[in-house]
Image 1 (cartoon, rainbow, N blue to C red):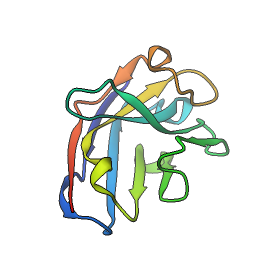
Image 2 (image 1 turned 180 degrees about the vertical axis):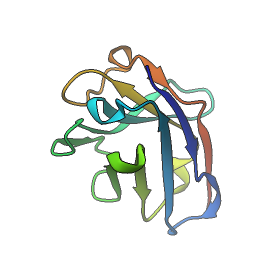
Image 3 (image 1 turned 90 degrees about the vertical axis):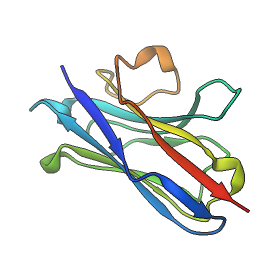
Length: 124
């Protein structure tokens, strides 16, 4: 099993950068693929980015491609989401999730472990 704790959210102006962290407990974190999702008020939780357990395969939602980068440091049991050129439409609660699948997926149902979320608010 793995437990996930997100951090790094905050209130920022449009155009700046933030880096979210997802700290995992459990010595087997390196065998999980990781995903980031977000949920804006009144909307469903949506896929943002995913990274395979080996760190070689990535996938991004079109809305963040070229601005966000997902990465991981298995030695630190931590995954990251670097968010650049933030826009007001990026405002949401961001969730880290882990799956035993070899490749990260866009399907929420594939992820068995979720963090509690961290709020990101981007003002115009």
